[in-house]
Length: 202
Image 1 (cartoon, rainbow, N blue to C red):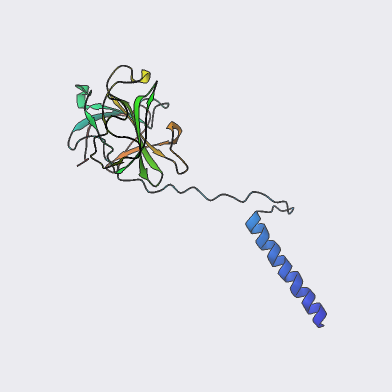
Image 2: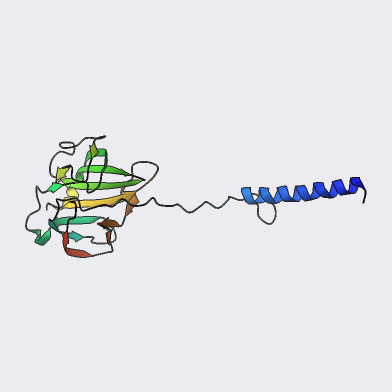
């Protein structure tokens, strides 16, 4: 075999290998047309070990209600004997992402817990920035507010609307809600009620 022929074959082989690599990296279809390479699955960061946002060993009722409300929870004292003014805590360390007033949600606090995880607290009794302000570091047992009935969507009855959210590219909204977990147990599902859940925020 002449050296010219051998060189030609080596060049063709190298070209074929390069074309194959290019197809794999850029995503070429059978006709050689470029296609969008498949995106890797989004990996959700490990969820913090959230505890209930209340004092240790207190007892609470949790409700999810309909599909437009779940996976958020509405929380009142067990037996709904009177929840107004009860202290609210983050249930896990973090930083206050924002506090604000909303016509429907009333006084609201959102806490960033790291890894894209956040928690949100609605209908708080006192002004949203009375106890904590944006940028404040908090622990699981920092008093951030009190249960109230502020905002048009509270229905006039004192309860805590609570959400766990996940978003890595900014402060999440209600569209980023995830199923709520406390002490490793998940509380989610349409029209679900848990009548006696004990806070382990100790």
